[in-house]
Image (tube, rainbow, N blue to C red; front, side):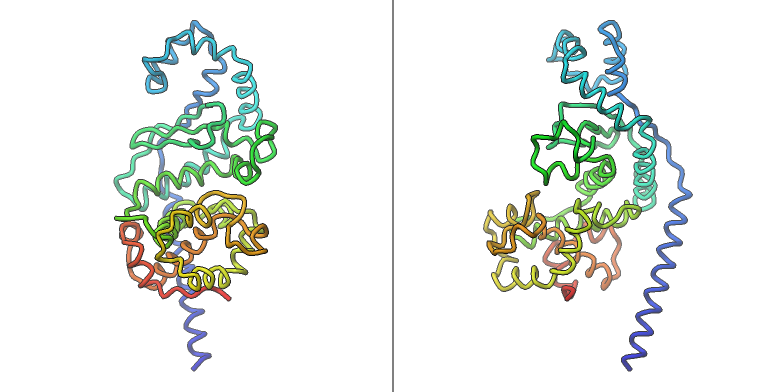
Length: 319
């Protein structure tokens, strides 16, 4: 009987892979219609006399409250000149990132028939790393000075756990995250479980929208950090359950296990060996288990309450 069950599982896995491959083949044929508008290059190459043309092309980037003299001064600012040079050297024609964005848009169009490609505009904003990307129905703004490379000299004074994901390969990952926020619904985010499932939804959204990225890239881990999470999944889950954290509304828990941080805070000796955001990783596995065991669409899952996803996931950590 065990052999039959194992054989059945193998068949299901094989057919699932075939289905996924068929879907990806179909998605690869979807046409997209967008260009990346390099405002950063246009601004770098402009002169005070050309400012009026820039304002006409990109009016939403120029506040009426900021006089033209400020923009003229910025054109000559030494820090702006340094950013112009750094972004040009790092990105060149932006082709690799554009290909990633096209892949994301193809998947968005497949899963959401109402999706229309927005204007995609790159800019610099003095490394405003807390606001790397902005998304609306019609416009995407990408602060590309936040993606110059983990070891770039401009990030020398930045904490490593933040700089680790400031590289061009993460642009489409962060963009997918912004699109997920527009589709995820939860009536509350009070407990640790609520937060875990919210980010689990976000990561599963990335599974579907950017399957060409690795799991490590999706969650922003190094391969070693991802391996730690996999190997210690049972330990992490056992700790959450034993310490009765899942339904706890303690406001410190998201900071310990969800938010960006150099490591997760179990208050154990192993803490500094751990990556941050391990609560997100567990939430991801719960959502994956839920989707494997329930016949629901991606859209339906994104709208489902956290506790319902958990109860119907029958989640069991890997040991």
